[in-house]
Length: 350
Image (cartoon, rainbow, N blue to C red):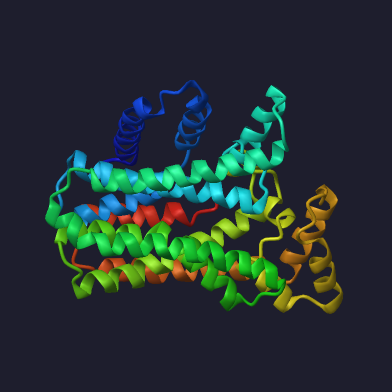
């Protein structure tokens, strides 16, 4: 199956599921909530469903609406995490559109309602994120996969969602501490993004098809999936500072304004002179950071060698992951697709 064909199947499954929710959201006052959900779900690269699907195929699973629905449910989980993430980071944009809390804030302001518009926006976004989280579980459970498959994978599904929430908390804690090491930033990246973006979706697909967590599955998920997940997050760190807004959907340098304590920032602070480190600490997290400030931080990140070091790490993790994939006892079509997915997830155009 081609990448476009898989995306179409995932998109179709999401549309069908959300359409089935409309009768329960028939109150006209709930229309903005549904519209926000639909707009958010219309974007994204569908990487998590792809890793899940090709895990399923790699372990011998066949095409069918059940696996497309189960894989697509991961997009609802991702959307939930993005909505909550944007509230915590006070992000203005997501995928080139106003973030959910800004969208609801604007709705309040336009209507001239009582109370604080910003508080309304954040509250509504939190509820939207919760709704998407509930839907992700419902779509997973009602995917029409064999009960034996769902039963085998359910503990993994539960653990993945727990890891994600713990990662969100660790991220908040990292920002509150104000100082970070590469290892602490890596821990956050693994919990918050790396595992649930690659390793766990792949594991879910493999276990759904195999109906058991065999030793080779764990080996592949750790040696391939975890490494690709780390490289994926490293690429996201770089794009958050140096990315093109047309591709990232967020203003240039937005991660710097939000003060994200990423692996890239940790490498920078570890290698910077005392003067440069002081500049980084002063500018990082300034919501009013202008283009000159962004350029200054970019220059320090590049001059310390942190940018190149992260690029080298991405290449190293990717090489190790593909070597592990080559050894795995999976279907050849799935091996080729997972090879391509790993490259796509860690490329400069991610």
